[in-house]
Image (cartoon, rainbow, N blue to C red; front, side, top):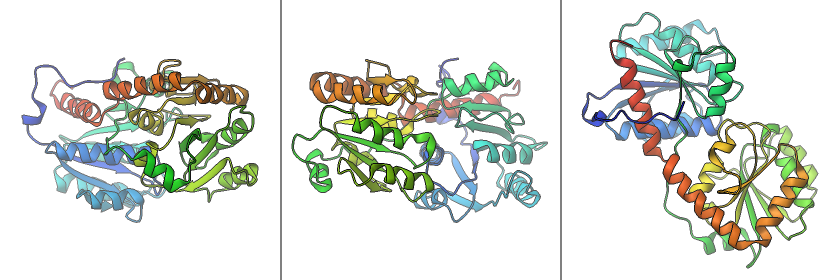
Length: 367
């Protein structure tokens, strides 16, 4: 199934505003959290009323408050926290919710169970990972962030007409200043600088990036954004061993602005449902070198807007980096194509309109 799009011939923005409760259990700041925040902000901008229910000491809660989105505390301790189920059900009733939208497995279960038997409340959930399969069957409909995620759901018994692919959409900030970024980070004139932004977990493959850099014949420097204060982060730092070609930037909230200072984006993920940061690099016009896992090939077309290699293939990563570093015309061509791919497929407007259209469709009496 293709990614959803707004229903032709309807003016969804002129219809009655919906009251939508989004639910997510997280204390992190990864792709699911960023996706939920962007979606909620976009829906609110289109006139809908939004409420976020989740842990109150989390990054997402703070960001929702900064964006003017109402929040309610929902502990969701494990999968069977009865007080949290009852609290969410009470919120749906008192708030007069039309839709409750759960993100990730735990919140999807809470959304489905809390909405059970409540007239007029449609439970929807988003599967953000290719490993998602349990605890989402109670939802009326599942949104998959990529075709790769949907394929895994179908392989685990979900119905084709019960899952819709809606790719992540990325907000576009003001363009960064290339020279200012390079000066601030100490990137030398003429230096081929690679960038990658991700949590330091095994799935993201920063260890493979460090090893690939060692095998490059062309001079290149790798800048890693993300908090390395994790067990895996310590392993990557030890592997780098003080190599000056590997720079650890720590957590950065200004990734969009930083991208302008770099020459290419590198991803060596072992598992990736979509690749939000990769799409962000495309939006910035950067060529991409990435492992062809999960939903990544839906974002990066090999030799179209980037170079794809097999997972765990360090030698192929090195060769792809060398090729971009030695062929600036190719790198420029891939970057330009990546920018166009973002505009065609991964804008916030497309994601928000597609999600809104799905909400409306599910509220139809025949549904």
